[in-house]
Image (cartoon, rainbow, N blue to C red; front, top):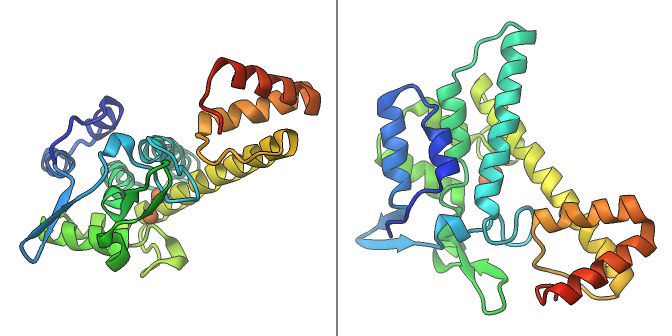
Amino acid sequence: MKSKLDPRIRRIINRIRDESLRKKILAFLSDLSVEINGERYSGLPLAEAPASRSHHHSYPGGLIEHILSTINIALALCDSVERIYGGRVDRDLVIGGVVLHDILKPLTYYEKDGGSYRNSPLGERLDHLTLLVSEMLKRNFPLSLIHIVAASHGQAGPISPKTIEALICHIADDADSKMNWEVLNAAKYLVREVTGEPWDRMDSKMAFMILAWKAEGGWEGLKSQIEEFKRKSSICK
Ligand SMILES: [Fe+2]
Ligand SMILES: [Fe+2]
């Protein structure tokens, strides 16, 4: 299914200097679907997709946030490698690797009534890395970029990072996933403590706000801010 690419993601891709790589990635993102044995599989639109079913960025728009934040971290690591350690990094590969590393996750999810996620029929059969590596091979992406994707889960994946670009992408991915998961967890815990009720479908912006309310106003301040928020909207469940 063709859909308009988020301008923030497009801006990142436009930083790739290698024109043929840039075009290849844009072509891939313009139609995020795969064909297996004559059957075409597509998933949630990128703009609405979470980055995981119930862990980090597990809300609509979470995948785009994860890509944007991981890019920031990865480029900071590139700066560090080059300016402090005097090493060399191929930023085209780092940018391409971060943009692509979870890009087929939406095909592996299905949104249930009520907004939670479960594996799609495709996601029950193939994980997002296997799917993406296969698709990148089919589309003739460079091996060095395919390696970044294959190694993005580090020691927990099928292969560990063997290049500095793959290591940077893995560390950035891991850091952003952990930060997001910890913040969501902490905010959900705080809400449960003060309201006695769960707030499952919380996004990161709300989670960071809840942490700030607690830091600024303590338990009482947090309670009144949440009550005020609930009065103003019916989003809180
Ligand atoms: Fe992943
Ligand atoms: Fe990721």
